[in-house]
Image 1: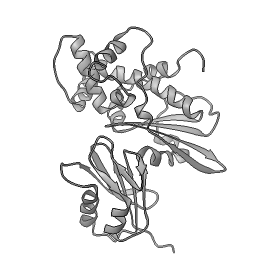
Image 2: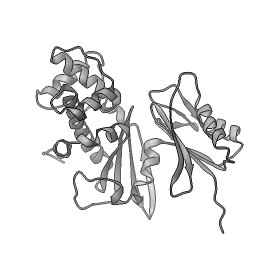
Image 3: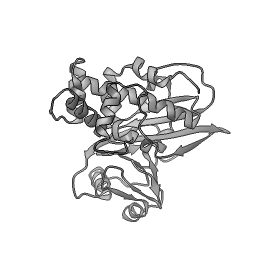
Image 4: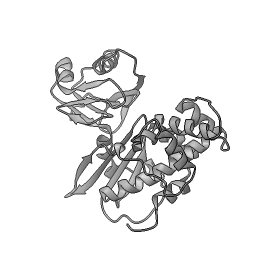
Length: 287
């Protein structure tokens, strides 16, 4: 009988750490911890490990940022994850670190239809899949199947220019206002948790209101009332997401599908307007 290996798995997002133990099929003992000022990534992991009192043999970590020289500097945070530091502290060699969108892509070819809902269903033309995650930032990656192997292409697509509306409308007015403070508006600047705040504040200026809300408050109000500025802010985010997803699909040749994910989208799921996203995804004209 094969002995089970104790594998610690962790996901460092823009604001929270999610950590647990994996047996290869499921994750148990999941803990979600919000970052506090002055605490390091190693302390966050070791605090959890010490509470569980297990001999750890493998560690797999993904985080919101590019991997460079076996380190990840987490986007929108001061945390740094060092593979060498983790190996030294836990005294094990079997440690891997990944960009979070890259890590998610390895699972896409295996994901079951029961694990996701479909916005638009057409016959797949290839085995290229794009992945977009909305949270504190905007993660983008892609996976393609070749000779029964998954090849993941990770990048920083969230820093691409925001897709502008061709017509003069509320979305364009909102972006024009935001450009006064941010001359270069990236997709991540608006299609994210912090982005929905900027969209809402721009809408407030247009409507002569100065109310300040957090992203959590905006989402909660939008879910409760579909006639307020909060819901309008969410609609603009969805519109931009549809346009952005179209560009990502074309860049990666993702004719197998585009997967949308992330903590922000999970909270917005109950008011997700499939028709609005699809309308902006299926833009008529040249392919």
